Structure formats: C-alpha cells, structure tokens
Image (cartoon, rainbow, N blue to C red; front, side, top):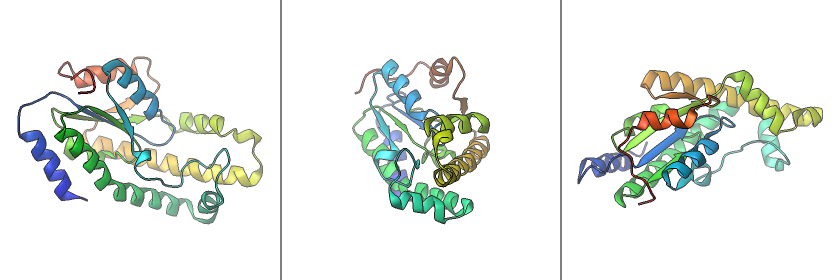
Length: 214
C-alpha cells in the first residue's frame, strides 16, 4: 500500500474549505455494469469518468479473439491461481489509484472512477464527505448469463469454452470476495439490475454534490 499517497490524500481533504462530494468510486467484478452506471452518473452530474482499466491491464475477458498469451494464461493455470493473480494485480494498482485521486483532489476537480480494483477493503479508508464508494453486485446466475451472452458461449468450440469458463470462475470468486468485504467494511452494495439504480446512488450521496467538471 502506498501509505504516503493515502496520507496526502486524506490531508488534502482535511485542509482548506469543504467542497462537498467530488469523487465517486464504483467497484464490482467484471460485467456487473460499472461502466454503464458510471456513464449514467456522469450524464446526470456532468462529471468526468475514469476507469482503472486505463491505468494497468491484466489478462481480461478471453473473447472475442484472445491474444495467445491471454488464452495460455487461462488454460495453463488453476482457477485458484488465476484468482490469486487478479488480487495481486489489484494490490499493485492501488498506488496508481490513490495518486489519481490525490491529484484530482488537489486540483479540486470532480471524478467518477470505476473498476474492479476498487475493492471495499481499500476504498473504505478513503470515504469522506468528499468521496463516496459503492460496490455494484449481481447474483452469480445473472453474471454467468451476461458473460455467456457477451462471449457467444454457445457458439464457441470446446477449447474456447474452457478458457471462458476459467474467466467466469475467476469473476464469480471475485464477486463473492468483494461482497463479503463490502459487508465487513460497511460499503454500500447496490443491485446492478434494480430499476431505480441511478436514483438510489443519488440518494446515497445526498444533495451536497458539485455539478459540473470543476
């Protein structure tokens, strides 16, 4: 953990005048709908959006045409090892995330940041009147349905299905871990398919929200 950057981020928020909520973090596993929710929030609040995927890449979804090294990653490792690598990747990304948040706070800018690396056990220490964090969640059955649909699973051959299954297994393990962590750290869990999702988020963050990108 980059403690120095986290400390500076907290100090930035404690110093100066309170500006109201200016940063929103949306975590959740793959295919849960993070980028969709972030885009809807951005349209409502007129805030910029960022993704942790743009900071560093990890072998992601193995479709439609996975690179050879991505296919080898999923085919050659056990489900437990694949999941372990994902968590290590998230740990390694945390200094980059806190640096991004600190620089945004220093400029008194707004930001909606989404990504699976925004794990509740990490984001809980950053929550304040200026930063809100949420976990987006779906049932395992709906996650599988979404990933089967987007990967055209039924149309794939046996070898391609195998690596897709490994990715799905990784995502389900990750989703269970994230939900348990959110409950432990009291990070709000949102049902990604609830009809009033956007309004629920807005109710959570309240009325003291900066509108616009500055």
